[in-house]
Image (cartoon, rainbow, N blue to C red; front, side):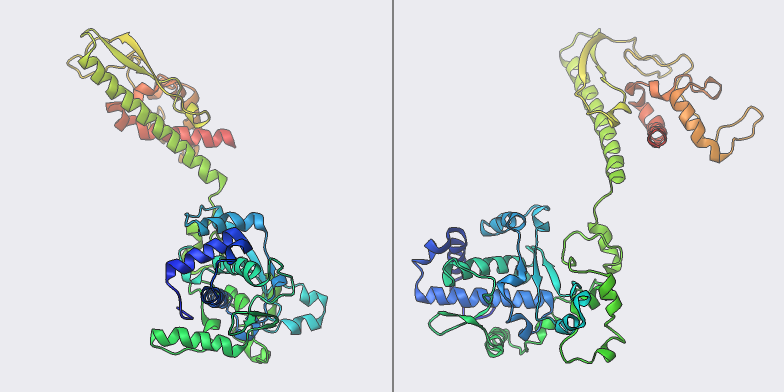
Length: 438
């Protein structure tokens, strides 16, 4: 909402055309469309910038092109996707540009104190894409406005000292050396809010974009203080210059936050990057699960094929190419189907068909922990990890383990045995891997 608007599609098409084609696209603009585009986009970029940076009117109207630091390699991809209505990737949403508020509240007081004070970054802000909030997306509106300002009003010669919000005459002509007035901004606000059935002042922008989930330290840094405000009073509850020296929250709008104290309710935990150890552990479990799934699917497929087409005396037995533990280090290869003669059918005792990997004569077992000693006592729990490593690499017939776990073929962990041994087997594998990596 804002200055009286043309049909939305006409406005969008015109802005897109100018941003993509440059000055050539302005030749066909009528005076009405030229003026409407200027007023509407200027209002949008002014309001979204004020909303995001908590600026007052007199601070923002003096903003110049040199106050923006824009790296085209970081923003062009995201801006291009905006123009073509494409979805931004995660890496696109981390491109940003910086805004330096040279007329920020109290900044001149710091400069007067010397260069050490002037080195502070309390008035530099990084602006990131916010495609989920188009009405507040300063990233898009600022880049669009720069393109329109350059091609429509400055004839492709936007200089560092040019105002970003220049005064505009009734005929749509820009006054290059003069910025818009406070009264003009107030008129915009009145026009926008009248249609909404309420009344606001330009001070409202200073309270906008207040992140309810930010900690006070970030709010204090982001908000700073205004000219002519009593510093001795405000410092008691909001301002602490020491916080400004030690902390820099210019990156507060970044979609991925690393700071542990940046948000209330632990929201930062949901968006922080995963560490390498977490990803490796997740990969190990995924690969093992996929290998199990492949084996099960092949077993079922072979059973169906053999029951349909195969002779009664033969079937296709699934032979995994590698041990499940190996798949945690190497890419999982596709299993092969090897025609073989079947082992004798199950007898009345319910023994299973394990193809070319018959069970040990004394059966399968994975000893429980802690290990029971010969005298009936149990080994200390703190030594259980030693038995886990031992059972992985060596057999332990005395406790029922006749084949070392690392030598178990995958087929022994299928069928009925999967429910009995699978969980315990993978726990042993995980502990062993962690030990070997150390």
